[in-house]
Image 1 (tube, rainbow, N blue to C red):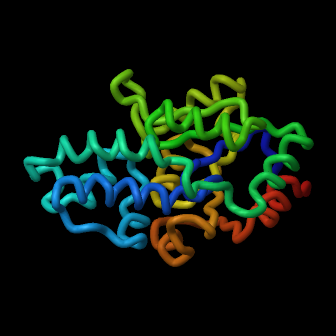
Image 2: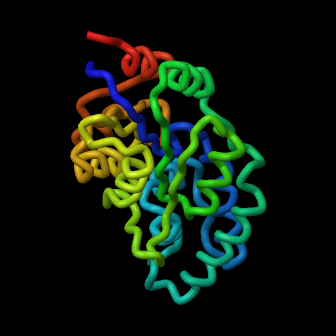
Image 3: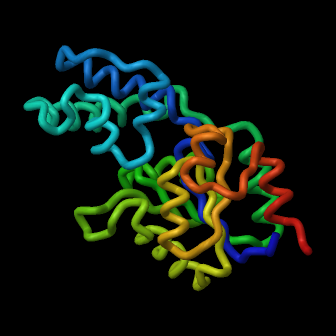
Length: 220
């Protein structure tokens, strides 16, 4: 594998295990509107395209439900209160980041989580990463799989797509890397399994953060 000047990570399901807190936030919001609660696995499969799509997927009838907007607002508010209750880095992630930093590889996070939440979580859990961007479509910055946030990271570091690799755990991440014309490594410890990722075009995999570090730091 070639060496890269920069590594751009997805956040949820790649660096941070946020599933339990997201599921709790979803079910708090659904319960406030008398809607059926969702299992951990249902929420896991609904994650990946941003908060609006998450709520659309868990609310009966999605955006056609007359209570959709209210439920979305309740989720945003309630999740902000609990977002750090159970969330934690996946085992081996701090060591991975330390190895990349010691090797002089630049690191960034781009997420479909709303921008302020993405920035705050990266500052709290991964202060070694200097750049984070989240969903800001109101500012004209399209969410993934559009490459806009990836391009922001590349611009901040002064690197080209050929000098970067994108790391993520979902089909959205595979498509994001494709749209940014950069290499992609799919991780199997996140919200989608290897079979799902393979079916959506994944070609290079890492099963553990240690394996990922070895792949990124290996020289030919």
